[in-house]
Amino acid sequence: MQELSILELAKQGGWIMVVLAILSIVAVYIFTERFIAIRGAGRVDKLFMDRIRDYMKNNDIRSAINYCRVTNTTTARIIERGISRASRPAPEIQAAIENSGNLEVALLEKRLPVLATIASGAPMIGFLGTVIGMVEAFWQMSNAGGNLDISMLSSGIYQAMVTTVGGLIVGIIALFAYNYLVAKIDGIVNEIERESMAFMDLINE
Figure: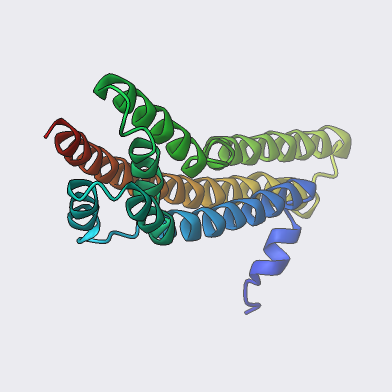
């Protein structure tokens, strides 16, 4: 009995499988690049706010800013923006922190809409291949007349089934990858909010 080759099966999907292969490569690239960036941004220094508090209480603004730059995490960059405006009224400091936080989160979410589009679009492209394959199969049937042979329909049926499977696989993987990255970003946002509140409490003191 002939074994089923994944590569040969994919070839039966036609040009739709090429599109799905390109989408899968793009999805893997985006996930890898964002995963590395988000993991770096999510680094947490448990002593960060304690050291910032010591610097601020000693009115050592320069050392506090330098420490933020050395730490170089998302939270540190946001707190640095607040420290640089420490002489301003509290509402201005709060606004600066919020604006900086929004920019940092936007950077973390970079390219995620593309990954979400692949997650929703890949199954639709697979279904398009299914429709094309079935149209080809029925066209073969209509032109066969009384000499209908099941082998004549195999290419269209293969394309119909293979593209559906391919689209669902790419879409499901992209969806899980997207949700995983969103969850990691949500965790970073929570950490930003916690540290920002601690910093504003320090300013109010």
